[in-house]
Image 1 (tube, rainbow, N blue to C red):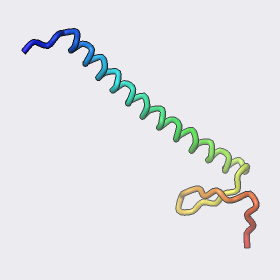
Image 2 (tube, rainbow, N blue to C red):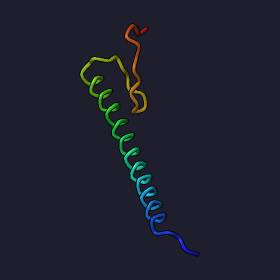
Image 3 (cartoon, helix red, strand yellow):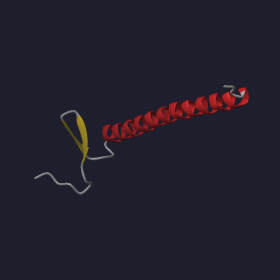
Image 4 (cartoon, helix red, strand yellow):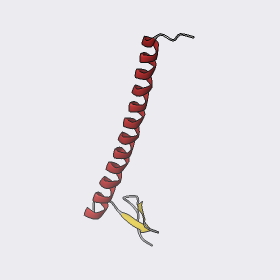
Length: 68
């Protein structure tokens, strides 16, 4: 059975392009989540957002929240 080398080449190019896309997509998602987390942490530490820490997690409080 003979497979044309050009067909093999296109298969390799498409496969490599898909792998590169998936790697880039995963890296972008991680950077995006890190940016959001860093922004929320900065705003809480600077006093721009009302928050409390519960079990090591930051819980953002509504602006009109009043302690009882």
